[in-house]
Image (cartoon, rainbow, N blue to C red; front, side, top):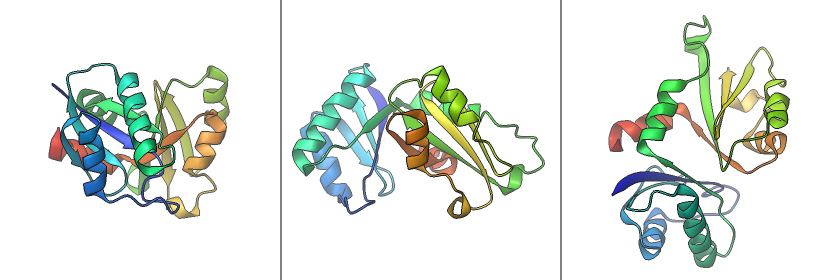
Length: 179
């Protein structure tokens, strides 16, 4: 059995509220085992013998739409992929502004096109820097996220695909607790 995490887009934001107990039950009904949730923002851990994460995403999306009546984009990663992602941090950790920064990760369903990556990276400012590695877009924010002109929706529009955003500390805590 492989341990995986499903990162769900738009759960418990924008009027779409799902109780975590209900979400766990939905995953179990869809055939997943050892289901746990991590904070109430759509992070669901599960075990599966299946190794095809695209298949996991399709199964979860169909099950959740049937259960809750609206589409919920899903991005599945293995625990080892998450460990690599946390280690990777594509921004210079020796940057003098390192302590006053936040790193966010946008999970994507596929690799964005080179044109989309170039478009995103070109948006860099003194306070916001972007990088894309594989199926993740990284956002380095110096200062509070609430004062940025960028948002998860803006990243989606720029890359031309759905995404869900998590702070790197959330991913690190998830790994520390469950990895």
